[in-house]
Image 1 (cartoon, rainbow, N blue to C red):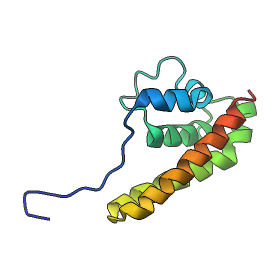
Image 2 (image 1 turned 135 degrees about the horizontal axis):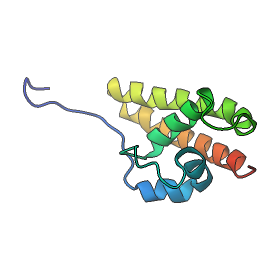
Image 3 (image 1 turned 180 degrees about the horizontal axis):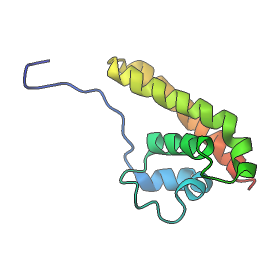
Image 4 (image 1 turned 90 degrees about the horizontal axis):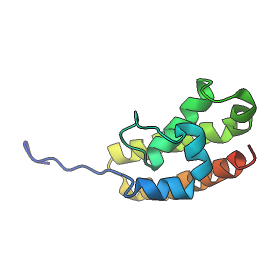
Length: 114
C-alpha cells in the first residue's frame, strides 16, 4: 500500500432485492415491511440483524428460541468473514460466504414455520 492509496479487500451484497427474495421470511421477521432505518440491507447485515433480534429480545421468545443456535452461528461466521477480510485473506472469506448463506438458508427454513 502506498502512503495515500490504500488497497482494501471487502465483501458487499450486490442486490438487496436478491437478499429479500432469497430469505423473505427472515427479512420480514427482522425488518418487517419497512426497515428504512437500516441504510444497507445485505447478507452480512441480515446475519447480524438476526443475531441482534434474537439476543436482544426484539422478536417474540417463541420465535427467538428456535432461531437462537443458528443465529449465534451466523454471527460467528459474519465475524470470521470480516476478520478474514481485515487480514487480507480473500480465499478464506470467499469460502465462508458459502457457509453464511447455508446458515441463513437454515434460519429461513426455521422462520417459515412461524
